[in-house]
Image (cartoon, rainbow, N blue to C red; front, side, top):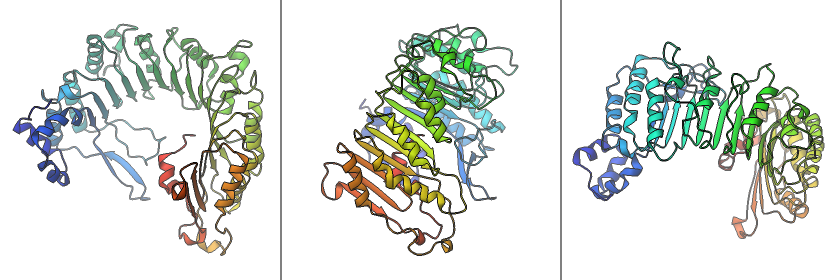
Amino acid sequence: MAQYLPNELFDEILKHIPASGHQLMALTSRRLCGLTRPFLFAELQFIPYHYGRDPADNREIVQLHSLENTKEYEARLAFVTSEDIAPLVRSVQIDVVERKAHVRPWNEPPEPRGEGVNALLHLLLSNLERFQALTSFRAEFTFLPMETVAFLDRRICRSHRPLVGLHLIHCDYLDESTTIAANTIIKPHSLRLTDLTIRPAKTRPNDSRTWLHLLDPDTLRCLYISDAWLERGKTLPVFPHVHSLTLKRVPSHEDVIPHLQAAITSFPNLEILRVDYFTGGLSPVLLIQTNAAAFPYLREFTGSAENAVTFLAYTQVTCLQLLDLDEPVSQVSSLAKIAGGMPASVKSLKVGILTRSSSVKTLRKLLLLLPNLTRLSLRIKTSMHPDWKPYKYHLDIVSKIHNILPRSLEELVVYSQGMVRISTGNLKPGTFPPYDTASLRYRLLLRCPRMRSILIEFHTFFLEWKAGLGGEDEENTQTFNMSDDEDGARFPTRNRTYKESQVDV
């Protein structure tokens, strides 16, 4: 491992390091480079993106580089697929989709365009088999060539260990004539993977189920599947070792009950379940037998309150994440109807709530269902509003939250988001004076004697407190006057702390 690098290989490395790093590299011995070589090339990414601004509205966009001259990329690919480098690669990530839409998580990438991109992609995939030590493969493009599928099958069959992860984003597995399917190359139930992510192309939403029929049920542990209808076609195999399942789909008018019934049958030992965008009034009676849990080993659940009524019944869930409560009063009321009652085992709750005049009352009802709660992450949101009334609702929640918290609480995280931005000319001096964060902290600690951590990010103040640190490290507070921000209200999303500890609700 301490061998010297060949001169030509060392020179090639320098070509792929920015000019600012050359001086540092010049001071680094070739012996040290030899030691670090396995780490330098452990992960390979092919992402020819360009980040810029949309001239129309100056919003950030991302799109492919113009690849009219592909010689530079060809040289790079030739280097990483060489005999010296390819054996060191453990992870390959390929993102070759053109994104011209604004950067938003819900924007779907369109199909790749350009002969240059296709040529480079073909060059990389044709040399994929050189990565003999590959343990993770992630692809994001709209067509998965058959030779790539064949390589993955050969790689997995030769290895004593299954592939750690396979992520297929918007990939078709048919050939160009759309007549030859992957199961003509891979035998059913033979693909040995531990983690699988599938988001099929819109034109072939049934691809996901076909992939599931190719998997070895004894090796799969985690599955993320988007827009797949599990109940269609022949019966799926049972995956006894899958402990984490994410079901995500685009909203439609189709009946989702058979789909979820298939999930209950095929994944009986789930511990972590996330269900996104499934709506339509699911009835527990249709899914669950009397006095029986859909997933008896479930300990973490993420989904709507509507789905929670179904999947939390008769379980010992410890971590609960409720997706946005857009109709909080009715949704919280439905949680009280869970068969067997809300699990008393719930220790952690993440929830996003849209502000209403009844928000405090709604939160009180929700927290009364969770008497043993030790950690609460709350995100308060509102839509655009022509005046400052939503801000008053936000402030009302924060100011009164100490009255409704369970006394067992040890950690509290509160974010306030989505304030309307208006010109400062509409604000009179003193309309929103600096908030008394010391008083708020005192009320919270008086209510919850076991409290160890507080983090509140609001439009006019920031409060962070941790028990036992002492001095300045124990508490960090900031207060803002809205009128000193020329753009309007201050947004807590700009704060460093929020980005590091963002609540996924």
